[in-house]
Length: 90
Image (cartoon, rainbow, N blue to C red):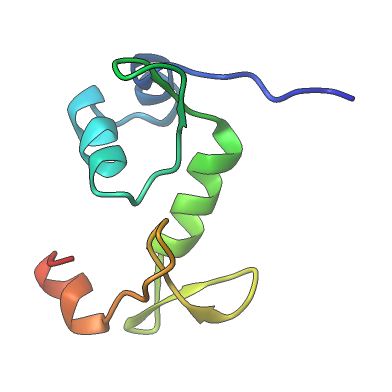
């Protein structure tokens, strides 16, 4: 069984082209899933990044999850209202 490579926030930021600060903010907001190794060590995967990209991508003025065609949800499964997406509120 092949396991996916775990990435540090710095490694993921370099791979996807956004800052480490932005990666950490997405993790803190619960929008980007991660594996908590210890209280200070959190690791990510590219598949987690792809899931975030799918739920964060706007299509025709609203946000959907392409895999299920359902409105996007945060990692804690509460739905994101369109008005909140536009204002950046949680």
